[in-house]
Image (cartoon, rainbow, N blue to C red; front, side, top):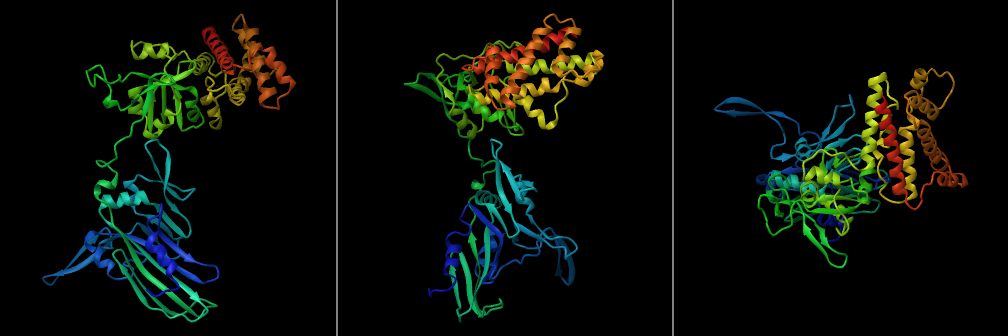
Amino acid sequence: MTKTPLDDFLEFIEKKHGEETWVSLHKRISTDDGSEDGGFYSSLVSQSATEAALNQPSWDLMLVGGGPDFVTSYENGEEHTKYIPRGDGEFTRIVLYRDFHGRKDDYFEILEELRLFHNLYYDQKTLTYLAFDDAGDEIEVIKISSSEIKIRKGYLRSFMAATQKNLLLYFEVTRHFTENVDYKGDVKNANLRATLYSGQSYSEGFTYFTRALGKKLIRCDAIEKSGGWPFKAPKQYEDFIIAGDLDLPLTYNCDPDALANYFGANPDAPHYLTPVFFKKEVMQKYYASSDYEISDGHLSRKGSWSLRFDNNSPGHVSVFLGDLGRDLPSKEQIYWKSFNLIPDGHSISQTNYQRSFLGNFFDPENPEHQFKYAFVEVQKSCIKKFGWSIFLPLADKDIHFLNSIRSMLTREQSEFDALILAVAKITIDSVNVKELRKHLGQDDESKSIILLGLFLKSLDIQNHEEFSTFLRGVQSVRSSGVAHRKGTEYDKIIAKLNIDEENYQAEFDEILTKFVCLFETISKAL
């Protein structure tokens, strides 16, 4: 074929357009110097109309249109009018242009059927349509800008397979030149049809142009490739360590249907309730995001998945092998696998044993769960007795402090600092000073810890001074080492409180336990 000024553009159309991760459904082409202009558009086409559409290079649709219409026909000399939901016949626009003739701003819409098929959420701030995978993670599916609308190829091809419609990618580009160009020709192959021609330029500063007008066909896959039910790809299951040692770990797949149970299934396989152990650090990801909810024996992601697990052991967490496969999405299984421990020396908690195997109600062993339960109970007790809570409710933007309270997952100073800040925020900083002053008849400007100490004394709590000393210690650690730069004062306070800096995990558990004792003592007194 003769070399043309648009060879690079045609090579892009033939080899890349529609084949890349993001497919351009609509695009305006315009350069600042006026040397190039044009655009892309697209539509789906029925199987029966595909070959006829590919036989000619002109676009089958213009930008405006695609809405419902009436069709009039004549039969035996009589006129018949019928309503049709779409006025484009065998073609289906993926992108619809809405024009209000200057009365309101125009804008683009995405085909409703496509949005509903993939259950897409429109984020108005980012101008993107989002899907959610099995793990609940957001996936950008469609991106909209002032000059282009593009879609992730996998989601487009899935919809094409489901509808059994092919894709036509329309293109038109004009390049302007100052020297004389005169070219005419056609391009035609199994999936591409284009015509090229030249003429007098309409762009200021240029004399001639060459234009390419045409369309590219991308055929749909078989309906089985749509990915929707009943063609959804089977879930993948990971192998986890269930026995052995570091030199020779024994792993087994967590597919719940391939495990033994109490009803005689798969007798040669490990039991569904085989415990699998993990480093506590596996939980960092979940505590760091408000997307997840963590409670006594339960982890969930809002609107996505939930997992029964044992978070009452002091040095690890554990999950039954079958629950890993049944409850965790494949992506999450891979994440958990990276924290998998050899079982040697590990066991499930007494709490989990009593609940899972003996069917008993059993209080949590983990100070994290004890703290949160006792905190809620002391609030209830105070409201029932006085009509107000001893600690002020947290603002919405501070709720994460309560949710973040936990037994430490690491021995890092940074985690200890963050948790000291959190526990101080929801207790000492949130003492209901106004109601306590009123209740105690205090007219002075006494601070929260002093007022709380007086309140404890008023309840005839014998060790109220010990609790006050404890609260001042927590406040001092927070003030000297978290709210401000650390120095000798922080070191003195740590030493005075006998906090072992080599074992922050145990020390913070002790702090939580003392708070639990405080809450329970107040509740009992009330």
